[in-house]
Image 1 (cartoon, rainbow, N blue to C red):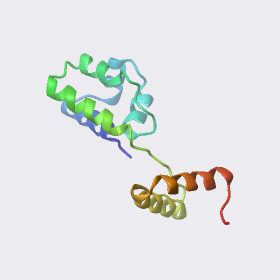
Image 2 (tube, rainbow, N blue to C red):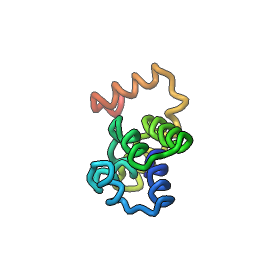
Image 3 (cartoon, rainbow, N blue to C red):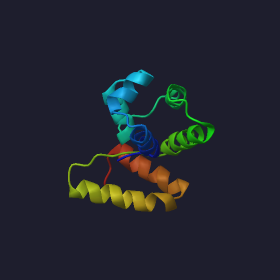
Image 4 (spheres, rainbow, N blue to C red):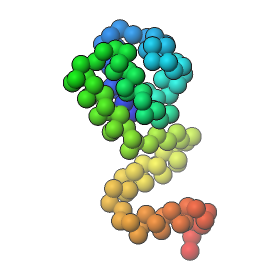
Length: 119
């Protein structure tokens, strides 16, 4: 799953006609790492956006857009599932999560941490 930052990085590369390896080399990371940041498998280091802005001399608007995308990506989580049952579980949780209150969240954390499935 592409994160907001991943989408922004990919768009920047496409707009500037850059290969992943070219951008990775320019900012001092491996292609594999940059790919993982784009896809949401790895979190971007705090200075990544600054390095990209400097390396590609992004204007103020471009810099702000990239910084916003990085900020928006902080709250994103990517989960790989192996089958449809796991997918349904994750989707059900994702739908329910925004309306859960603090007490419900604590109760769920307790159940998951203990391995308990029924009371």
